[in-house]
Length: 179
Image (cartoon, rainbow, N blue to C red; front, side, top):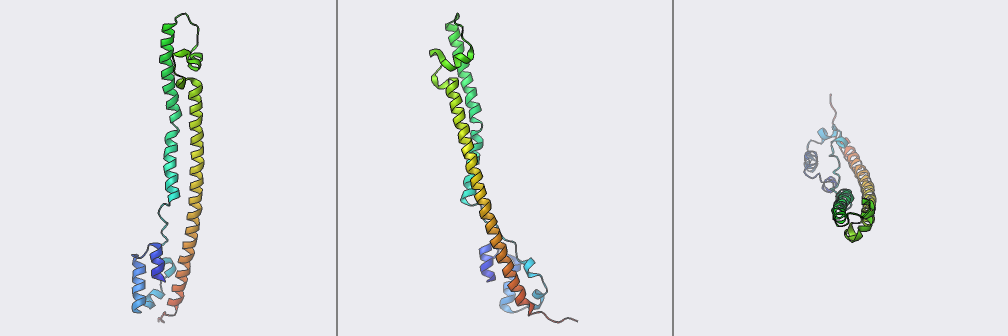
């Protein structure tokens, strides 16, 4: 039972486990083991390596963190394009009375529709919406991982405690009288 527990827990190579199992097999030094707090000596549980949910959550978080800056970059690229086009428009139409924001929205045939303020604002909003959805997904996956980990730790600690009590009870009968 100790070996099965140690294998499941990833503690097969633990010094306490190997010595205890060896002494139990050979029926030696059991009186010495009986004086030790075996529950405390059993190795702590090994938490499982990151499951797929938390790995996925981490990857989504990286993508989300990068996407946070895309609207800013997109807007500044659009400002650059609109400024260049506005300069071309004002050079070609020196008598026209147009402010920059009006030009940025209408384009007047000089600025491509993809770079107009309304289109860029829509793209920014869509990207921010994706960031919000990704944030919700990351939070959901992290909560699921924490619940799974909490359940695993509680179950593993109960198994460790139950095994420690069994060992203690068995070894209690092996105690020897001392002066």
